[in-house]
Length: 249
Ligand code: NDP
Ligand code: 8X3
Image 1 (cartoon, helix red, strand yellow):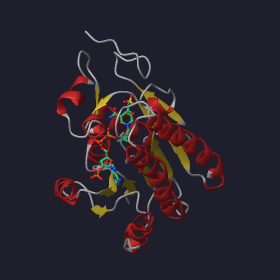
Image 2 (cartoon, rainbow, N blue to C red):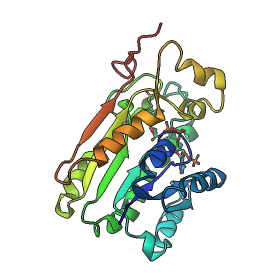
Image 3 (cartoon, rainbow, N blue to C red):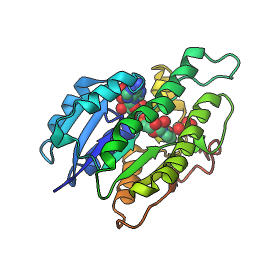
Image 4 (cartoon, helix red, strand yellow):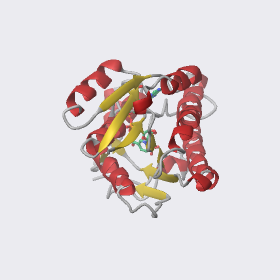
C-alpha cells in the first residue's frame, strides 16, 4: 500500500512541484488557501494516485485542527508531513517595516508550522516509518539586512526541526530540515506584493533554482533506507554561495 504524504502550501512553487514529483509513489493530502488551484492539482494528479485536498489558512489554529480531525479514517494514516507553507512579506528595515507583515511571517512560517505539526504528529506516531520535512531557508541560517523577521521566522524553523528530532526520537519519526537558496517561484511576487518588476529583479543575471530542484531534494530524503535520517540539506543555485552572495553576469 502506498504511504500517505501531507503537504502544506501545495498550490504553488515548491509544494506543488513536490506534490507532482511524489504523485507516482505516494497518496497525497494537499493543502493551501486557493481552492481552485487545489482542484486543478487534484484533477491532474488523480490520474496517478489518490488525492485529497483540504483548504485552510495555517494561521487559523481551529481551522487547522478541525481540517485534520475531520479527515476520513482512511486518510488519517499519514506517514509523511511536509511543512512547506510559508512566505516572506516585505523587505524593509526592521524599524520601518510594516508590523502586519512581520506578524504574518511569524504567524504563517512559525505558528502555522507548529499548529500543523501538533495536529499531524499524533497520526504520524501510528506509522511505522514516519518522516517530517520542514522547509526552512538559507535565511534561517544567515540573517540579511531588511529581512530580519523573515530570517527570524526561518531560524525558528531550524530550531523546530532540531528540537522535533530530539523529542520524536522515541517514536522513530525522522525529521529533515531543507534550506533552499534562491528559488524562482511566487515567493518574490508575494514578498513584493505583486510587483513583477521587483520580483523579477531578484533573479536577474543568474540561473536560480526552480521548484523542481527542491522537490528532487525532498524526494532524495524520502528515498533513503528506513534507518537513514538526513538531518539537514542546504540547496543553492550554482551562482550562490551565501544568503546574499550571488554571482550575477
Ligand atoms: P510560493 O509563494 O510559490 O508558495 C507558497 C505556498 O505557501 C503556497 O502554496 C501558499 O498557498 C502557501 N501559503 C502561504 N501562506 C499560507 C497560509 N497563510 N495558509 C496556508 N498556506 C499558505 O513560495 P515557495 O514555493 O517558494 O515557498 C515555499 C516554502 O519555501 C516557504 O516556506 C518559503 O519560505 C520557502 N523558501 C523559499 C525560497 C525561495 O527562494 N522561493 C527559498 C527558501 C525557502 P495559498 O496561497 O494557496 O495559501
Ligand atoms: C528565501 C530565500 O534569500 O530570499 O527564503 O531569504 S531568501
